Amino acid sequence: MAMSSALTDLYRYPIVQAPMAGGASCPQLAATVSEAGGLGFLAAGYKTPEAMYEEIKQLRGLTGRHFGVNLFMPQPSNADTAAVGAYRARLTGEAAWYETPLGDPDAGTDDAYDAKLAVLLDNPVPVVSFTFGCPTRAVLDAFAQAGTRTIVTVTSPVEAQTAQWAGADAVCVQGVEAGGHQGTYSNDPAVDGMGAGLGLLSLITLVREYVQIPIIAAGGIMRGSQIASALAAGAAAAQLGTAFLVCPESGANALHKQAMTDPLFGRTELTRAFSGRPARGLVNRFMREHGPHAPAAYPQLHHMTSGLRKAAAKAGDPQGMALWAGQGHRLARELPAARLVETLAVELDATRSELGLQAQRGAVS
Image (cartoon, rainbow, N blue to C red; front, side, top):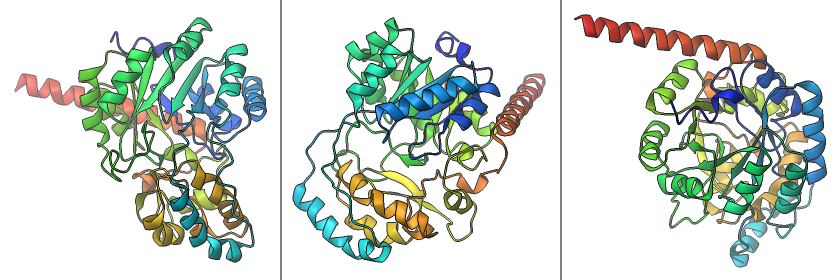
């Protein structure tokens, strides 16, 4: 209970809407989730500091409840330039097909991190989370002094311990089932072998052995019964992305939403094809053709393929888009976000009640 108390005043229900970079996590979605009793999130990744600030202002105009903003950590400039060049040559056919130039792989690796920190420290928000690494203690202390709670995304017990040592208020424990990018601290195939991540329930249990700060569970969660399982394993709350992606308030492309339950896209895989970092998405033509050849080069490949993905969406071609999705994508429900939060809360309560009754029966027998 002590571990959970650092977060419980942020929401009525232990339901966090994942920050999904690329447009899905817009102010309307985050505000609706927070108003319904969950914790809504904005995704600042790939946005300018000015755009992030404007979205925060919009969100504050829609709700007075708690919300969060997610930042991407700066990445090392150590990509293999020869490998990036070879991948660029491989994509020339895609550029011709979609009639759009390939992006500049050297467009930057820090995602305007320092400028975004400055905005968030000058205009504090309730929660800030971090992905692709752990901030310094100085940064986390500065947010603490500003009254902002901090969460660091982790994919291993060691990463969680690092976050605790640095002063994070909580960790978002991301299982390998999660859609979108794996939030690993490094992007080294020799260390983070593709698909070598741990399943969520095992990861929660392991992390509990390493840290005393609250855990938010993320990875493939689509039903209230799964939230109950995560809480029973030791999490304080559950974070859902794919489940909210199909809501009408989500800013995700309509083709992306439709693909979640389209029989044509029956499974997900981890791939570096679109960004150079492991990310889980629906298997499509682009992933099949280029995934095996994509080097570990993030955000270089993200910059290179950004125009291709936008052109594919404009052309109505989901086979060229990054269709990020968790393993539970076939369970997606096209409900308004508030209705989804309420439904998940009812399912969570029902599961807890059923488990309680079963425990009572076992004790009596």
